[in-house]
Image (cartoon, rainbow, N blue to C red; front, side):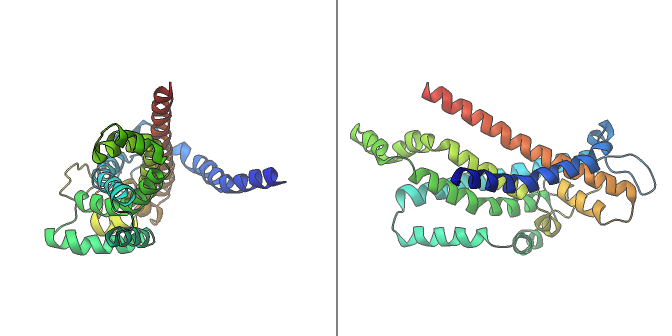
Length: 271
């Protein structure tokens, strides 16, 4: 009975995802062609066009957010698990991370607008990367902490018994042992922010043309999908469905690739 309930619960969790994915394929697959990946959006009334600029823009923004969020998040998790146990500072960091996890994304966008966009005097891809990077940090921090706490203390004691400094033991042994779980946490944070639109409205603004300048407004898939979805034009609606399908596929491929590389690394280490 317990096994049956567990299987049923798994199906109930996966079923909405499968339903959404199938519906996206039904609505968006017909609009996927070479032009979609190589051209920018056409003006209203002109058929064709694509979202090449939005795909490249999303890649740039997500790269910026990962450069900011991943190192800080992992460093925070290491401090909480290895060096700050029981201290007031660690408790404050842990509480802050939990609070940030529950902050609505639009509030994060408004905050970055006030802290980055206003002083700069213009919207930019950099501001969008900052907003998404801040959203990644609490998830990565808490996941890293939990994964490090799962590493047996015997491993740490063995390293210390051999005369290895504590910092070297953490970086070379403990962190490496927990790396599959930490990478999974990073990909969960990545997947969470990849489809965010509200923070980008206040930071990136969007761009209908080619732009790779991180100090200027830039196109992004979530923004382009939002703009096309609320428009009254059927051609833009079809492109919005295709963009949503591509966004989901890119996220799934990125997570799958990292999980595959991580599992291969774990198997090689075990052998």
